[in-house]
Length: 225
Image (cartoon, rainbow, N blue to C red; front, side, top):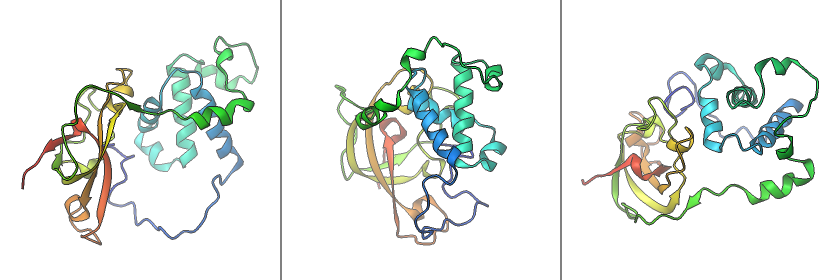
């Protein structure tokens, strides 16, 4: 999370109002359709969750900044469908329905609840012991993907090169930096790390507030006061 989609402490984006009250989940009917078709397309097994996140990150910055939430989703999905060879770009303008080689993988309406109920757990078992323990002081590295230049990473830019404390050890989980680029799961230990807001931002409104971020092991290094 190192470009326009990393919204932590960016200048010019204005304040976030946490007291907007209850809003509709979908503000337009097509929003629900976008969510549905995105989930249904995932059943084709042509990409994984991290690939879909990266596809949204790869939208042109101008479009990302001006698109609504579900415009981002449908645009990224269209790109994935073409990139993975599921459909040709000219087929988006062709309303005809034809048999497709992947039609046997389609997610039927009757199966949606069961499939979503199972979820897609990312926890994995690995032999390597955790490098860090609860209460240990750590420091984050630079927010960059060391496998793919400019690639996907889950370390937000605002939390890079910052000192924090290990709060929770979650065990090993699929590593997004490789998973998003079809380089395998390569699971690593995952930690919840707490940071003072004064450590993350130069002039925070509440310097004593704590921000917790889930961080993979390779994003961290030991730090001694």
